[in-house]
Length: 201
Ligand code: GSF
Image (tube, helix red, strand yellow):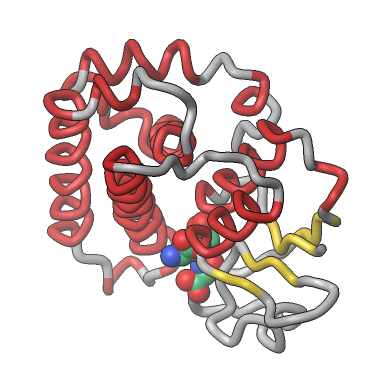
């Protein structure tokens, strides 16, 4: 399988952490992919017409994309149990969606700053995205610490990758000021070898 990859992408990192945690890194070939919304990757558009990463090309069958589809597929393939059964399953899926929402907001802020010409930038956009992030880390801190402290699942991995992205791109904004318990959880989670091996660059 080929994984279309960029080391800075928090969505790709979810897949990489899953591969590390399940000991299956050798099952994928990493294809470094350079792209932005205004510069699609020529080697990818034939596989994922949206030109977004991660994408997972398989020996047969459709190329899979959207990180949540890929993580669910690999969890199934490796029988990894990162999507638990019972009521915890729906929490895990919601937690992963929450993490992806933080990533979407954080990535969108970077696109606005880096890709738009200066005269077309709109600071209110970035502030509104940051407000989403502040609200969300606050909600995680207030309502999700018990789940986050349970057995490893894909929701936790995704939140770890989302918070890692905030540190990587938005460190100066200080998300920890809004979520002290979450910050404590992340200090420990970030020490996992899978997280250390996939630090964004
Ligand atoms: C989001 C992937 C994404 O936006 C997923 O896989 O979960 N819902 C999708 N990836 C970015 C790279 S990144 O900053 O992580 C991407 O591919 N952007 C290119 C574009 O055209 O938006």
